[in-house]
Image (cartoon, rainbow, N blue to C red; front, side, top):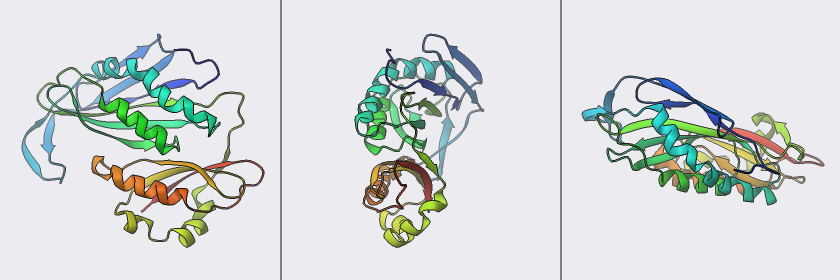
Length: 239
């Protein structure tokens, strides 16, 4: 992958429901490793326990399935640099895979990318991944990567969440109730004048993705404090 002019990419540690281990990829100049636990009872999406065990998959099998898709993940992110030149951050994806190795669900359990369009594209790529059959039943794991903006671009000013508290209270005091979700961590870029350039968010679970869209759309419509002559970046929790 030619990274000239765009971001450096680093794989983030992946926690896998399976046997422990780690892997190092010199091919991508990236680092990846994993830890795992024993098989455990599977649960329905509503939280109730069902008969059977949640299976296992080895960390190296996860890496082997997802690392070849890094170019596709980057194609989700790199084009957005034309609109948000300092776009960057970390993404951690939570997966559940069926016994045939196809993806049952995937969602961004953590992300500081701050661009919902790019994040949706990343999820689309992840859903198409195919894994070896897990051992003992469906398996769950997390896997992620970091995307750094070009070195010649000035990073946005970093804001604490408290900086935008008044804007949220006045513009979206009932955001969690209106969108029917809590525990969503939003990252937004704020342009001079207070306009939200872009925003993205993590999801508390796989069922909350549509509600996350609602939260991000609402945040995009807010007027934030004016960062001055250059843009700012802020991450905050909606609860």
